[in-house]
Length: 207
Ligand code: SF4
Ligand code: FES
Image 1 (cartoon, rainbow, N blue to C red):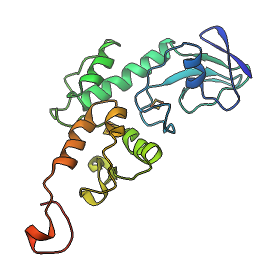
Image 2 (image 1 turned 120 degrees about the vertical axis):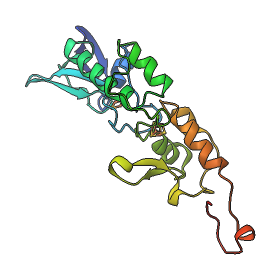
Image 3 (image 1 turned 45 degrees about the vertical axis):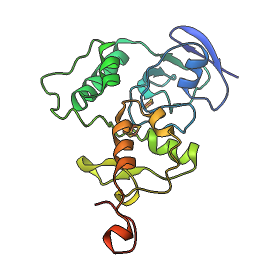
């Protein structure tokens, strides 16, 4: 077992655990968005940042990725940590003001959408990739993936087409922290299929 201090208290965790895992076992709450215990962490949202002093220097790290070490000191609620979280939440709600769950989480930190918020209330996907990882790791499928790059990056199906890879398990809907998958999944699944019969050509594609 590894012994270290979190928020001034002595806590323990097994070798290989992350700070987040040790915190949850010890009943210490660290907010997360792109993390779920059933899939590999990716460090996409950075909301789980905590302050670490491992004897060399104090720094802010993503607790869902950072391994525990003997004697380290972790602060999950320092002013610096709360400022980072507020800053991240401000960016997220401004970019995705249409997400009820994001707005509720931000509000718990005293954050509301600012004057710089997007006018696009439809785009609630923060591109955390939890749905993609869940599809691959839990369902064993590759029905959804990232499409395009940069500002055009989005969640889609392979080739933007309905896919038999999707077994409608609902894992992506359950995992999505913003509710964005409701819209994406519905669009993908409800899109009328154009068949060889209706087009007179081979293959299946969207209109
Ligand atoms: S649909 Fe949801 S789970 Fe998937 S990337 Fe977007 S916010 Fe994350
Ligand atoms: S929960 Fe750790 S980076 Fe998102």
